Length: 485
Image (cartoon, rainbow, N blue to C red; front, side):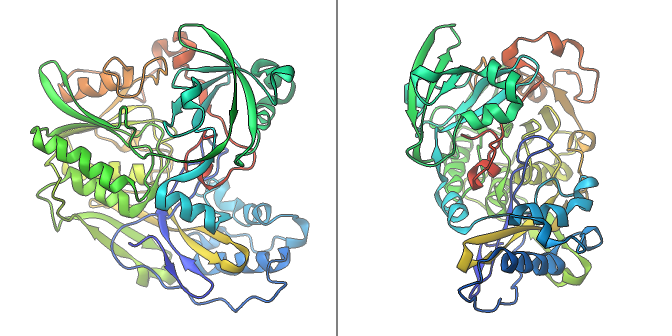
């Protein structure tokens, strides 16, 4: 499917987006495969009052009534006058589906301009870090840093702890005191908005326990979908060579980067791969299809996935097939690294692989988020509104879908491993990479669904209670990448 089809005032795009980070997070998405894209009916040309709240509410309700995947779970009786913003009204309309864990904040309104900028180049504004909050210890850590962001050159990297936050060195407040006084919302609010030019001062603690105070001004930057430091490499474990690839997000610029990675794997004769999607909340289906093709040389014409709309929109159902990629490898064994932040397009790639490597594919780490549904994007251009509507669901070639509780219970093999941010991503000593390479070599492991054992005694940098810090008013990139600031 092509990402965007524009009519005079309405655009429809299909992507598989983020889980939003945790059970209370928001998500983006449109799921599926194939080549046909539904063409919505044009909306009337707006008048000068078209962007009033009542007009936008009426537009959103009509769109949901036409496209929502769960029409019997749409509460059309909600009084729009009871809500002072569009998103709260949408949340009320889809609340019945959310209560059944079928739409966990996946239907929402966002900015057309923000979304287009993100998917075309990965562009957003902020510090350029993803943050994880340890709810047990009340501590805040950098779990990933983007090399092009303003914070990375000032000492922020994976494992860095943010001890205090302020608008200047004179008014720093400790993260622990913020959390004690106002909960996680106070911590998130202290980070400030994502607007370029916003400055915050931090006291940070490095892995060697050294402390420093730095001020960072947020700015626009591009999110490289594969890190120039650890995006891909060929590694050796127990005498076996395997490829490692870490995809941050499914944006347009990921395709050439993925092709480059797999060309290297192919040149070195690699057929076993560790695919690290531990923080990847999803994105464009076209990129998910390219990723799947790169793993499946020789399967052109075989079914990759099925996309299903509601009964009244069944004419848009479609089938995606594997196609040839020059850089593709014929993967013989694949270990996918995942966590609760792994969702949507990431899960689509993982689910699509199962029927073809039933005994040679595994989920490593923790259970995934559980988002087998996708969204279409409906545009109200005059108001810069894009409504992401859950409108479809996907299945793999074996007609397996509906993994609303995550992929762990459906996967042929799983290995539990902790996400220890004391190790850089792609480090051979990282517990998740070690467990993944162990699976490739046939080592035994503890299944994800088994008793947690000693996880509770792990250090704070591998704590099981750490989850992405959610922004109070997330922009589009923060919906796609939970914990992004």
